[in-house]
Amino acid sequence: MARRSALLLKQLLAASQSSDTPNIISSCSRFIPSRSVTYMPRPGDGAPRAVTLIPGDGIGPLVTGAVEQVMEAMHAPVYFEKYEVHGDMPRVPPEVIDSIKKNKVCLKGGLATPMGGGVSSLNVQLRKELDLYASLVNCFNLPGLVTRHENVDIVVIRENTEGEYSGLEHEVVPGVVESLKVITKFCSERIAKYAFEYAYLNNRKKVTAVHKANIMKLADGLFLESCREVATKYPGIKYNEIIVDNCCMQLVSKPEQFDVMVTPNLYGNLVANTAAGIAGGTGVMPGGNVGADHAVFEQGASAGNVGNEKLLEQKTANPVALLLSSAMMLRHLQFPAFADRLETAVKRVILEGTHRTKDLGGKSTTQEVVDAVLNALD
Image (cartoon, rainbow, N blue to C red; front, side, top):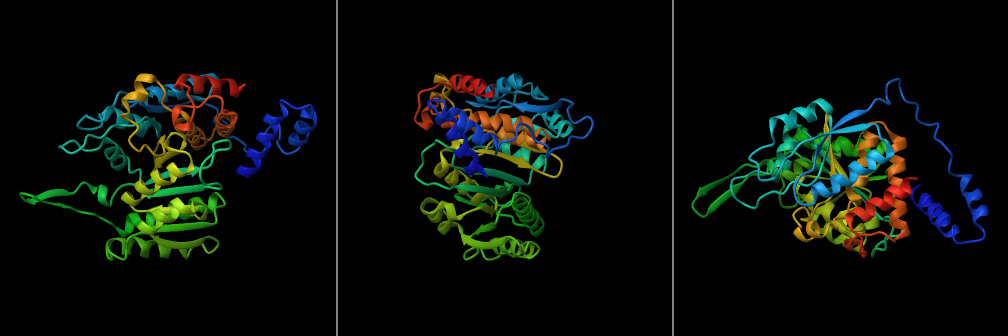
């Protein structure tokens, strides 16, 4: 479906410089309905929704500002409650947690995590406090963006609350530190169910579990056991397993073989950033974190660009990832027409190739990309 839409969009763009424009547009119009009849809102669904907004650190205010501009231009039925949160704070302020619990949805820029020391990651705090147990990153080829590999469309679903991120570390004796990796059957089954349910609802054909059970036989063994049990309940979806080191090699050589990937916490971080780099870079990959009651949308893979001072000084941060993440947020809020409009505009700007930031081979500033997206909305 995505490839067919991309082909039609290419034809439309090419047609703007061709004498055959009316014929091509007429042909395309047979496939693209003027409006959708597949979504019937319930009474009151159009009421504006409050969304907690955390601009964050570094380039965060720049890219969240881009989203605010686009939402205002679209007259999207959302409004933001903005809070200042920074990675060097000892904890997420209680009023921010309360806002997210009230609104159920949050959009955030990156939060820098200090290296070493006694300050824990606020990103991890948010996930645990709100029980955002599933991280989802969609890594896919964007039409018009040339990459080494084609036909990449990978969804990485990562367990978000335990594993190596449990934060259970201590110094046994001077010079010896012990860090505990915690894996539970409850959390493993929960993330496996989410991955298979996602595959089922989105017409995905395969779920791959990533592990290191050949070495961590009990911990990763429990994760695999849980995935296998859940897989039996979805006979229409192919299930396979891959060791994490082989997974990385396969990702950079034949990424098109993967569909949905389900992973423990640390592996998912590595796999998602690797897949993002293969499909076009962290600046264009959307993502989010979801639990039973709350969802936080953010750039899918950060890979250290949050604190890139040069991007901040030159105002050349790529806003595409967070714009696409905000389209995911709009669908989550049951505003599919606004989500489709935003996503189509972003993809058109990428396809045209005139306005791109440096990470995509261009020279545009963040604002120039935003302006191009605003023009593409019309």
